[in-house]
Image (cartoon, rainbow, N blue to C red; front, side, top):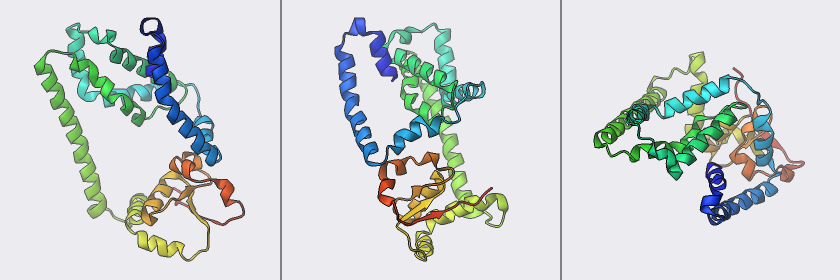
Length: 260
């Protein structure tokens, strides 16, 4: 969207050709999405237009969360940005990628006024965030930026490895606040036990009552698991592969997660 806006804003300078190429490049994916939705009750479009926005409201918390996420994502680069601003090197504002970055941030911030903007959305512009630094001729600054990024990434890798080690060796399945983690670990690593459990019932389709549980069970049984019932607004992949019209009159086995 930010690229499209950039092309529209600069249409007098760039002409219609880049905009037409942009539309031509996006059109096959749009048509493919419409085709998939036409085969699955339009659930994915219904999700994005209704379920995802049903609790949207104007407030200060979401913009604050967006700014916090942005600072977290750019943490290794903030000192570099400060140095560039201090050196008055703002030439990147005039570059197409720099303007697209600013437009993307403006779009995300506007969206955050009405709903939460996830960190994974901001990851889509990570490379654009690095772009201004690459225009610097200061090798010391570039190496410092690489060192900060490496250290920041290493910290997350250590935390991830620590979490994996804890789940595998330190988890106490009898402690209530760790029970859900243990259940998740057990389901994802004991597909045969899960298949024996579901084999006791006669059903045409296996489902869970929320997206996370469906994903975990699907990993365990190695086949798609639908999302149905309360908490089903995050069907995601199931939206593309399940046509509920084909399940009319059939039996669905729903696995419920434990209530907190």
